[in-house]
Image (cartoon, rainbow, N blue to C red; front, side, top):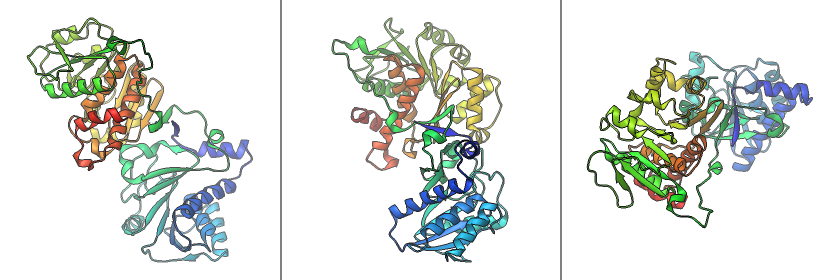
Length: 463
């Protein structure tokens, strides 16, 4: 798990004031980090173009070009003339050692985007739009210096934002790089050392990035056990029974000792899944919403939830009156996608916004929801999944487009419900269920368009 920050200028300032590290020293470390990445991945003599802006992001690029000069065919392209104190200084240094310049862009082995950095928060001029479009059109391995040019402070992307293969970011991870829209632009993200370890450079943060290695699987360590030792999940089986059946099968495969579908119609279910008209007396967790439709009356929904068991709620539940009672439960996980979350925000009078507005401000609205409902665990689905409770926030960035298919969310609900039934806290169930879900997609060996919910369920055995 890694920390995420809204901004790092305060961390840089701390380096100046507490560690006696100058801006120049931090910049030289950043440039050396970029140069080292290129040395490790490209042979000497490879062509490198550094597209430089007028500020300190451009200065980072100029310093990198100077360091590589002599071993690589480096050319400096000035998107804007150097203006900041450090950009002027680094340009002088680069030109003094003989780094070449170019007035026109051309294909190359490596392209470094150092046009604008973390301070950018507006829109490109027409001139810079043409430059960015030209950079994106080049055939090259593309590297963003700190952040892709055009990625704003709130994570929104300007027109013609730079699209890179890798972002080499300085010192610490910036939260803006993990908004859904940014995923198209940032590529792989690597952190560069600025002269002190991250343990020293970073301070406290309430936002964290989940790594796949953080996954804790529900291994069975107790030898003297039986099926009841590993929990009993009860799932509401509604109009679209297939959704709840997939959830149930995922839950059973992920370790729940018993799984029961609860419904009021005759439904053919797999032999490994039980079916009942009542919530079993020995149930340890509930799952509600997957394919629910209008199968249950309000009275039947209230009866299903007539206990204090941990609950995961998904899908149709966000449009039902019973949601108000669900939000009052002590142990609950909500798993909306963007449209469902906007409906939820409106229902609880936090905001009446469009999906488009939400997607540009996901962090803000998650925080607002958690302020009003600090006991609820929220899992907001998306290209990057946000999991939150109270003042704890986590981003799972490992989701893939392979999961964009009907039924994937039902499997996720089953995974989380299974962990709830086995005794995981709601927050730990959401985090680990989500990590397992994306791990299954990452491990799938077929074409990404071919992944089905049952491929995910089959893959649970190989986690």
